[in-house]
Length: 85
Image (cartoon, rainbow, N blue to C red; front, top):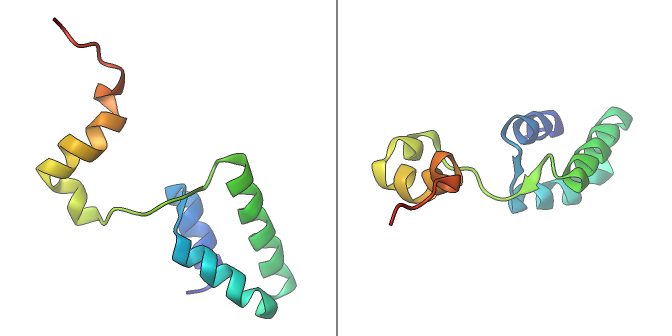
């Protein structure tokens, strides 16, 4: 893993994992000046809530019906749906 890969993956998904934050902290002493700037930018994105600490769901799980019904849909379209009584 490189800092550039980590930065782009975190920015594109909006998620950084705990292991990635650990890697970032343990390798900061070997970063170039440009990599240090990217790490600072990533920290600011986390502070602003653009990138959040969490986990990524593998793409094959996204097709599984139970995952869609119980994990994804409650956060998506059906989140604000009103229940009919």
